[in-house]
View 1 (tube, one colour):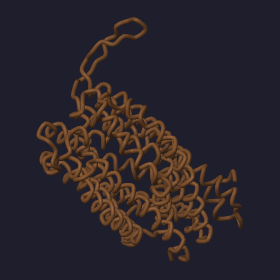
View 2: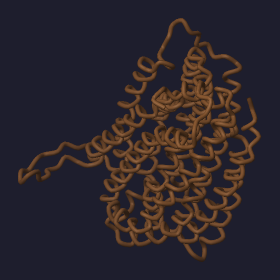
View 3: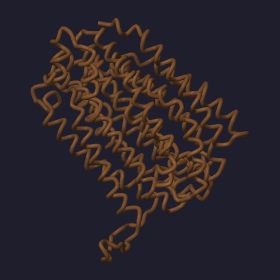
View 4: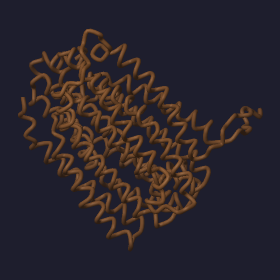
Length: 466
């Protein structure tokens, strides 16, 4: 098992259950650590902004679902190429993997520029469209403008990281993401707060700052993203054996590659658009409840994210394992990897949900000093934590199915679940139960979604595809 992943999958006649679990974990833990560092960064960001009051937190919270929508749709274009890279690596075709990667870089950058232009054009009107109070409009619109402008950089970083993972290299993107989180905190400290004096070991030290407040949080994240963008370009295009630039290989965009990328990617874009669009609608449902409810909703979502970070780590591992197995012509092995990774994720996220049930008061207390925001955030989060095992099933199973190119039906399942269950139930319950009703709807929807994804994982026809 010390051979590279592609060799193990292509050449071994039999891989035991223990070896499969070991492979899944070996690929997943760097991604989990990457997710963990991202969540810690979000916690620290939230605490920095939260120190400026509920309005500052609400300004970011009101557009956060829109940032997820735009980034989710942009990132969906990456999967169509990274899955093909995984298949080529599994088949042992280095030249094809390399060619697909650079065709992907060209294609997603054009798409990223288009998404960025759309985002910047609506940034000024977006907070008002979402029903936010007038006191939040300026900060929220500036935050979203800066975020949108940085999408072309983020999407290139995304395809480099995703394709590195597709080759089996999970560690480098994970380490660089940890570094990005550290840099984000440093840059945020400079951009958000004004120049001030702090006490260090009894000495007064003057710390420079720009005092930009909420827009400074966006600028700090963009500055960190630029540094990591350069690092990922270097690792992917120079260091990686499958992806490094080779003048002998043609990088002309081929119709069949683009067509396959589109067939894989557009359902994911639909899924991301549907899910994140539903979050935008949910924000519109929550916004009239006031700044305390908006801030509590945002902080509770951020707090809950630490529970599902193992799920997204295992999702990335499942996509790589299944993709390379399918590329090597071993669909039975691919299905086995998908089931093992999903069960693994359900067990881990059940544990993180139990821990967070008891830890959430302290975590929310770290992010905001407002007692009313803390109390409401804890009460709604503890409702949703009961659905973590099913949330895990939907996350990891989706990654496994993606590696097998099964994206359309899972995307439609997500669309039906979040719009048919979450939005309708939230709209019915919010009038009587307020924010609590919205989170009851979320819990019901996540449970339903997990169940239907488990059924799809076991019955998908793509496991028989050669």
